[in-house]
Length: 97
Image 1 (cartoon, rainbow, N blue to C red):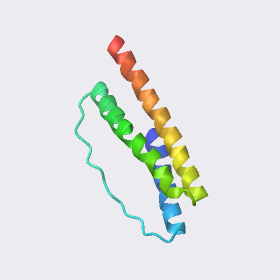
Image 2 (tube, helix red, strand yellow):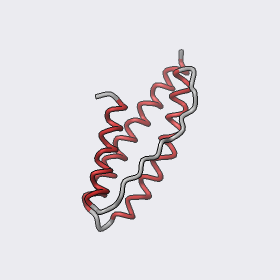
Image 3 (cartoon, one colour):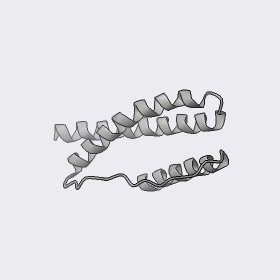
Image 4 (cartoon, rainbow, N blue to C red):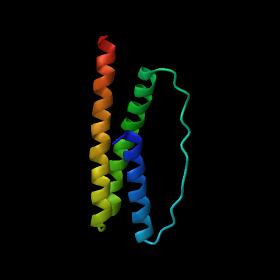
């Protein structure tokens, strides 16, 4: 499955969970810079992941009494960590070339 498809599936899960909890979903579009090469794209994504991981880990404490949401966030953290590791590996390969 493509990365964008995985992101889309995660967003659908979050929206479905919010609706189950009686919340209203909000769509926000994140601004993305114009990137002209692969290394620059990986560096941007690496920075983004590095910032997201601590925030995601912090959010776990907010769901101590919500097993379903907490498990969902735990899976998002695992996925994000794998993505971060993949990016770091590829940046390392680029630096060797």
